[in-house]
Length: 192
Image 1 (tube, rainbow, N blue to C red):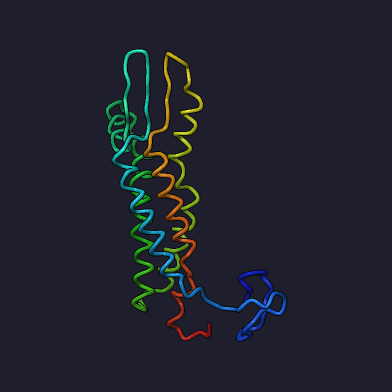
Image 2 (cartoon, rainbow, N blue to C red):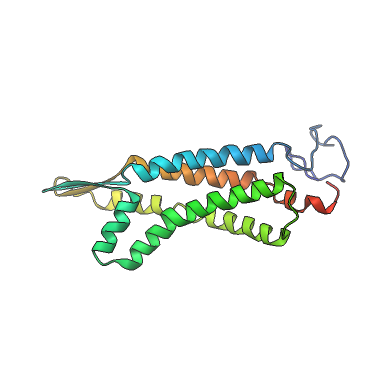
C-alpha cells in the first residue's frame, strides 16, 4: 500500500511509512462522507445554473438573457436541432445522470450491495470519463464571450449560471474522485 503523504509503497499490514513516519491506511475511511458532501454541493450549485441566465447578449436594438433550457428552446425554434440536442444532453442529461450514478454507487456501497459489481465498476469508470468533458458548456460561453465583443454593436457576457454550472461540474468531479471504487469489491472478503 502507498503512503498518502510521500507515495512510498509498503507491504500490506505495515502501520507507518518508513520514509516519512506517516500512518498508513489502505482505504480512506471518510471516502463516502466526502462523496456525499461534494455530490450535494454539486446538486445545490446545479439549481442556479438552470434558473439564472447562462448568457447575457446585448445588441444595438435589444438585450437578452438565456438560461440553459431557454437556449435549447431558441435553438429548436431556429431549426438547429442537432446543436439543441447536444446542448440539452451536455447541460441537462449528463449532469443529472452523473448525480444519479454517483448517488447509486455511494448507496450501493453503504448498503453493502452484492449486485453486479462489474457493472457498478463500469458505471464508476463512465462517470470518471464523462467528468473530463462536462465543462463543454462553460468553454462555449467563454469562447462566445471572448469572440463577440463588438463594443456598441454586440456583446456576449457570461451570466451567473455559467459560474454555477462550472462549480456544479467541479463538485461532481470531486465527488467521483473521492469515491474509492475498491469499496465495490470489498464484500468479496479481499484483505484491505
